[in-house]
Image 1 (cartoon, rainbow, N blue to C red):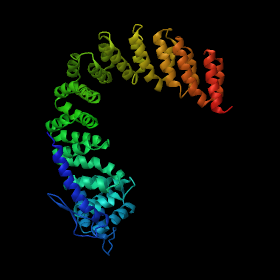
Image 2 (image 1 turned 180 degrees about the vertical axis):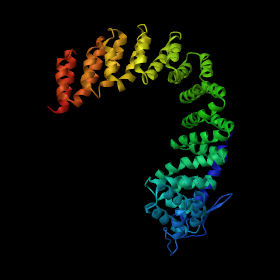
Image 3 (image 1 turned 90 degrees about the horizontal axis):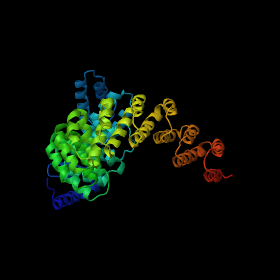
Image 4 (image 1 turned 30 degrees about the horizontal axis):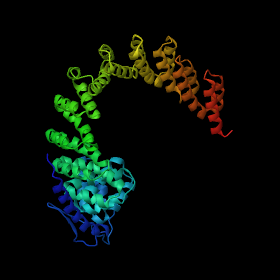
Length: 473
């Protein structure tokens, strides 16, 4: 879809002019009763002027409606009651209902009837009322969604400009999501054009986030149109967000086309989303596709994503497959993912598999990933397993990771484990890291242990003097 920026800019200027003409009436509470926001399809009145009379929210008609057991009949009675209300009293009535002694569902139904009626009869008044609210309570959330639906049923581009100029930032950020989704469901082409134009002239990340929501909504009804729109966007945050949200529906509908585009696009998150979604529904087909990819950054991203999904389904099969890949970065990283995923669910099984590896880079990375996952929920079992390992580079990697995992919760144990690392450089670095944390938590105990440790003298002096300066002694 080709978007003409000059056309959009001109349309926006015209709409903005209409808003500026209407805003004074909106701000003065509707004193000019005949002022209107004029659009091609509808006219939206400014807030109605408050009358002298009052309306009781606890009227017999409301109580009768809420006492009705049949939900369909209750809905009809609530609608009839809401239509009889004076629009100038609706804000007060909503507050009264919220403070009344109704149970949750009945209160929600009553408020929905008032909000729907208010938005249909006096949209500007309802929006001004919403703009004055700050509490994120249930009524606030309900009003946000219902008003967004009603605004999108009018001229949404006018409503958007009104919100930009009249609603507080906190209210705008809340209502934009449901508003744009509703607008995209009704007319995705128009919202995409205006959204693209506004994003091109603003650095605010919200436009990128909303582009993702629009892409997802559009894809649910017109996948081809959504794909064409996303592909027409220039690179940047908006395109990235739209691609992320588009990936799920596109992969569900045509995984091969989505995957082919993902490998060309090379957007990491989009590539991961497509790969994971395809693997969840048809792992065999996804693996066959991945096997033909080169072992570059794209291939590694795909394979590591598949490794996580496959391990969740069948860790033994995944472990066997990835461990037997040709030596290289792809095998090492995919194997590390398998170990991490497997260890999060069955660490002892993962440890038994890792224990079979020959000493080398794969074993070292696998040991490190194993401890990163295992130490969090099974430190005692992990420690017992580590104690039986011979002194090797892979053990050093595992102990280093284990010590790091314990450093904030049990620095004393972390320090003692770090002392058992055979590689001197790795040992000293880890001891310093743990000691720094320990000195902040328990200076006396840490200072005593540091003094008795096998750290070089200059490192002991450095750590202890830093601790003394921090404590002011």
